[in-house]
Length: 121
Image (tube, rainbow, N blue to C red; front, side, top):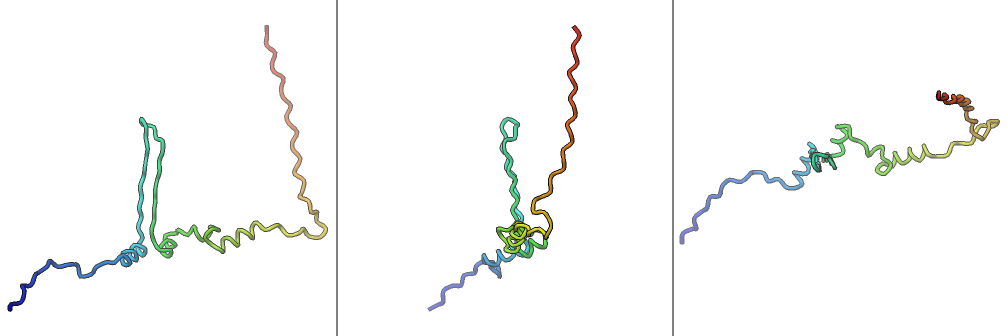
């Protein structure tokens, strides 16, 4: 019996990229996707939508100066604590000080109005 003939296939890539490899590269380098959508009716712009999407790792975003989540109380417990401390009621006034706020400064008297000029007949 003779062995079956060997088939020669075209060379394939030596390294196949998995989804995890691609995702790691995208998060490491970052990717920016931009787009504009404009709706016009007879040369009158009715609506414009500008889309800017950045996909990257947190570290990469911080390198680029994007760190809005550190000051947003919905995403950061530290920002939430700072917000609640800023909104806390003010401590009681010192002894001998008035508990009531200072009176507003008096308003300047309104300027007198001029009488309308009489029309000549």
